[in-house]
Image (cartoon, rainbow, N blue to C red; front, side, top):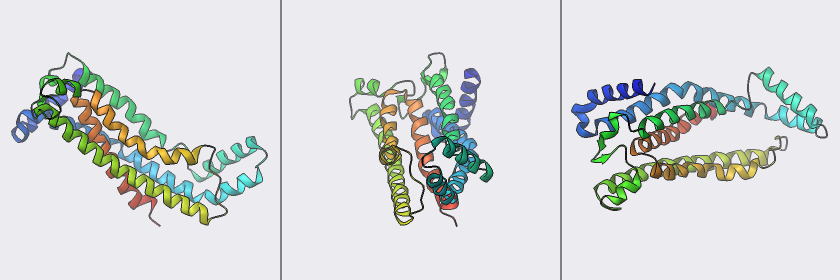
Length: 242
């Protein structure tokens, strides 16, 4: 599998070489990441539709919570039956996230191994197989390689800030709806606090990008930017649509 991916990236890099020169392999990594996220996009759309369906079930869920307030087992059973009848699932959002884990592990293994020729390629002179500490050792923070990482961190920070802003906006809208609707179902214990810090997780990508090889950092940065754009697009076209 790793040899096949390495060959595919090398072939893509050869195709992009006339446009990107010595950074063609880095461009191939970005293009490959976009293809992976594009392949997962139908699952993201299904997740957004599931979120919309769960919003429509809010009144029924609130009624079930009132009816079975003193019987958690009946509440759980009735909730499962309600989701089943509506063709929705409370765990619909886990699919795309879980499927990305093995994809990233494969990509990371490919980029961190020492038996692949693509690691000898560079991005603006910075080796794809090196990490930030290597760049700091070779020229310092503002050296030629260090500046490549600073640019990468800045790109991740912009995407993370956009995701954070969008997440806080959605949380505020949800809170307003719950405050205005007395029949809104109660949040599970701890969910309110979790919703406050979840948007901050996007910034953790910066820390990850600092310790993994540059090629893997490119994967993370590209995937983070895609996620930010995808969430905004899906919210406008599906979740917020009448």
